[in-house]
Image 1: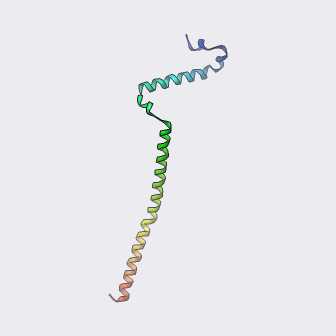
Image 2: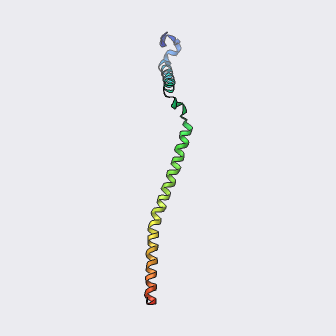
Image 3: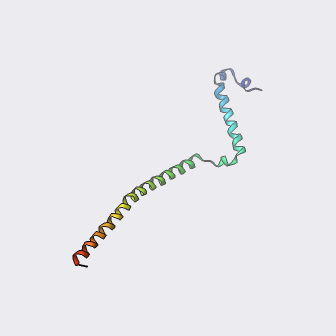
Length: 94
């Protein structure tokens, strides 16, 4: 019996929505049957992975900022130490 004939008269107004819902339900079942790996997908697990990745990404960004600040600071300290050593040698007459 065709889809439209199975509908009751008061369902005719909602026929497109009913058809869409049934169509996608059958399509999803078929895709899960053809691709069993899709059954393993979990939306909440995916969201957890995204949150973990975001946290790690933010941590890496903070560490990079600290590194950008630290590298020149180390170089400046080395220059200052070399200057102090040179001044010490000059004063002591070495």
